[in-house]
Image 1 (cartoon, each protein chain N blue to C red):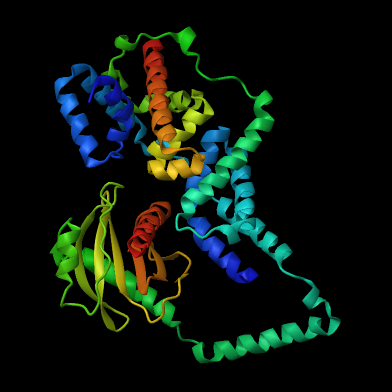
Image 2 (cartoon, rainbow over the protein chains, first blue to last red; image 1 turned 30 degrees about the vertical axis):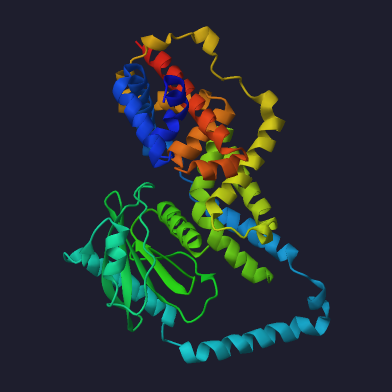
Length: 257
Length: 175
């Protein structure tokens, strides 16, 4: 590897975007070439300077509401209107809706939904894992250590990936008990924040999800995909947690394909 | 897909990424008010074309829409803008005169860092925002800016090089 090749690849090297072979080539060259080594430390300095939260503009309060409003309006405009135009429907539809709502509410009246109970359970499990020194039964950053550890302890094999490169390192795995069954808990970390990912098989193979919920200051994201239920919980910023969830989903998609 | 179901799926996929959308729009428009308008317009566009979204990477998908919306807006408003782009000829800083340790910025220099980044041309600034602030992979960036991976790599290298020169010359000018 000569200087001009190194110079071209240096940014990709700093960003961890090169394959291992090229990485080695660059490292070798940097050892022997003071000029490129200087260039490398310049790049690191620039990256270091940019890694400050004060450059990141958070969306102002109220923007989300404003967007929800306008998108909902657009959704209404998109919905077909002709069907509802009959004048008798103007009375019948609200009446029927009201009747339906009452019917649906009766069994649940006064009792929280199973979803709410599960959210409560997940948050409680997360908090419990932080309280005592019981974050991980198998503390390891190696996916090949964590994944086999679950063998024989669960009747399924949870998907385990590491996102250290993207700033969410795997720190271990644990057995937990949720929704009346043993589940896998995968533990990740972002800076000082702990992320618990609870995984267990779901009855159906459909892809579904739910909105982000916030309870006692913890954010909870859940979805069902590839035949598993996933519940992600953390006190991390909502946008960061969404980023993590995306990483997880793409790695699941990559595993499935 | 029913209207209500579409709306729910859309909100689930898109709303968690409003910070990312706003951050990119804020850096491209360089002001808070227009950035909010851009995010709103982009969200409406994204909703309209949401049936066509089957991927898993909602953030990259939304950022693509935000970027396109901003570029349309920039093209229309270009004449109202001050040309703040940094002229390397005038500032001609010698390469070897740079001292990277000078980049050890103090908290008071944050404003200067912000200004230096704003002084970069749009196509360089967005790369730094997407990579160093948003932490997208090269592959995701290639998708967002609709360019080959090689272009992402070389443009990012040039963007960081320019930013370094701007920063160093400003740090030098400072009393």
